[in-house]
Amino acid sequence: MYKNFLIPSVSMRILLDPSLCRSFADHAQSLLILFVKHVGDLYGKHHLVYNVHGLVHLADNAKMYGCLDNICGFHFENFLGQLKKLVRSPNYPLQQVIRRLSEQDAMPGNVHSLPRNSTSNFIVKKQHSDGPVPAQYVGCHQYKEIQLPVGFISSLNGNNCVQIINGRLGLVRNVIVKNAATFIVFEPFHHSAEFFSYPLSSIEIGIYKVVGFKGSLFSCSCLFSFFKVCSSPKGEI
Image 1 (tube, one colour):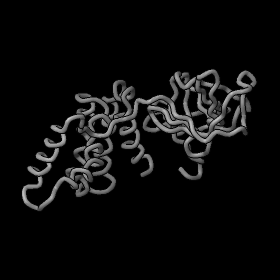
Image 2: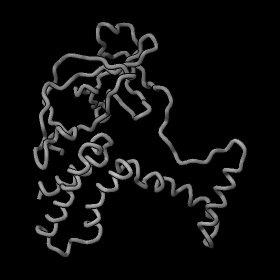
Image 3: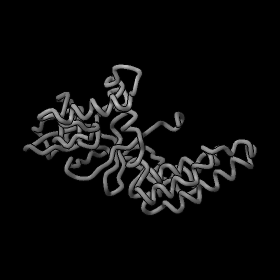
Image 4: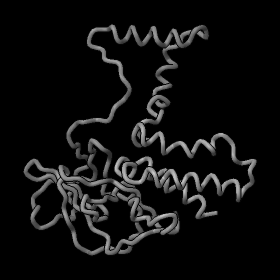
């Protein structure tokens, strides 16, 4: 049963990631078809309802429109609360919403749009002097948190695991600013390996098992490519 549910988990990991979706969309579709077949074999044909069958078409949607994160309706669901405030009576709610939005668009200097990701510069927070600081950055300003256009990173557990573009994985130990340049200071893991091998190697989709630390510090400019990743102790997965 565990291996059975690894199949949709891996498939969705592929279809939600832009780069993986381009390379593995066909494989994800094959896996989802296999999962639907297994559902009927393991739990009975009566579980093959419309929602289960619909999984086999997700890869087609991703191949046609792009990764699923780009075509999901979550932005509209999050905006639903604001739309409800525009309805003043139970009669003709759709017409009321359209009328209110049209009025807002017509107001000078008012731009009505769905929330978008920020494109502002880096914002560092919670200055400190506790280190650690690599030798070449002595005299820098130190911070515990940084807000990037793509997300929030901290030196505290829970928001401090990153993957550098060269594949190196580690934990952020400090955020530093020197000569108007911003860096993260991270400690790489000692060893990384695949976490599972079925239905494909987890390394292929960016999931690793890591052990220990190398005991050395490295820095990475915030202008350089790195990704925030999720980490969890083995017993809590």
